[in-house]
Image (cartoon, rainbow, N blue to C red; front, side, top):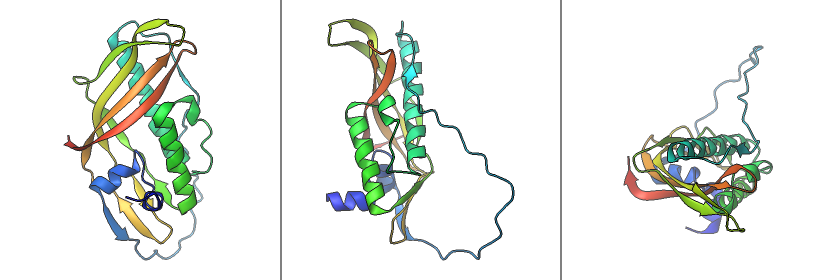
Length: 203
């Protein structure tokens, strides 16, 4: 797949699932315009602040904090889809390839003039998720500082509408997702480090 194709379809960690499991269709003719409702629609609040916590003392705590961090990352991504040229705040919750790929994704969406709506859903598989030791640049170690989350991803709520009107929608199929979340001893923050779709592995 070429870089141009990636941009036009907003290919990303979340959007890729649509292309793996979804279908492309022409947008339907718009319905007749109706008068706008006078009742305002509540806007969900998304936390763009860092996820801070004490160093985890056991694996259960590490898994809980890592899962919450990843969920916040997904919520932030969904909110940023509404204004892809402004990714302010992502650096608070992501690092490494997770951050660079999210920034590249939103750049592609903005340049292509595509619209993305919905949220990517993640369900943790606690039996295959685990923690491991990590250390900072000073050699200070933490027993459960790196967490690998394994689980099921569902992009059925996501919809991509390209500038030409073509749509990519999820069909509700679920795929295995591997996410690495790391704890920073220096800042007391959890950060999503990488996110990988395991092609061919459904759940």
